[in-house]
Amino acid sequence: MLSKRKIIQEQIVFLDAGSVDFGDVLLEPLRKAGRLTVFQVTRPAEIFKRAKSADHVVVNKCRFDADLLKRLKNLKSIHLTATGTNNIDLVAAEKNRIAVTNVRDYCTDAVAQYTISAILNLAGNIFELDRRVRAGEWSRSRFFTVTPTGFQQVAGQTLGIIGYGAIGRRVARLARGLGMKIMIARIPGRCYSAGELKKRVLFSKVIRASDFMTIHAPLTKLTARLINRRVLHDMKPGSFLINTARGGIVHEKALDAALRSGRLGGAVLDVLEKEPPALNHPLLKTPRLILTPHASWSSLQARNRVIEEVALNIKAFCAHQKRNRVV
Image (cartoon, rainbow, N blue to C red; front, side, top):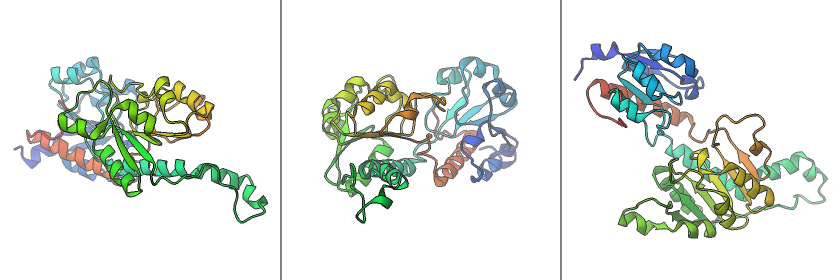
């Protein structure tokens, strides 16, 4: 094991701390792991200059392609403050003997809580009722209330879950507590063990039977635009869609059409195919749609935990131990 003195001499560069630390996160665990340099934001053209002397890079969304990884001769490891590794060329990292780690399950509770909040907001039509009050309908009402529009109870309704990892399982547990029925979808083309197959239902049956459908799967070749025009057409009329996973899983133009036509009762998207969206992004004007800025993961507790986990990943690497290694 490396001595504490030697570990402290390792140079750590955090390239995009502003994506995790909003002025409220403790970076002390990283400072204890080595000599820390922090940049709030790093543009693509700045990555090489800022990372070239680093032993270890901490990063959330900055991209490391094969050419960049080849040029970073001093770099020993890359540590993601996230679970997804799409922004790192893992093959090139392995070729150049650069270790890569990520952090799993740090935001399970946060995303599950957000998902349940989305279900309840859609079922209760909370935003629409708030809009009607602010428009003066309650003030002009002859009664103590206004006629509810689209207010449903979730007890007894069916929740379809696409992606049944830690977050999907937590959502299922919480939804059962609300009295919902759970259906776990088989992702078309994916191979499952015999045990997994027993818990999962054909994708086509899930989309036709679900009153609410929530996505918690990674973006892969099998899930890219999985929710397409045909799937949206086959979904139960008036049903609701929630996506907290990756924007590329939902075909955005098809969703826009399904919501405008009234085929779907509503949707909540915390992710888009391109983030951040352009100011004229079509979905910004789509009816029956709630958009949030990729924030379902971002509770203070989750962000502090991811920093703590990354610090432990760096210390483990320096001690020649494999912890959360992707490469």
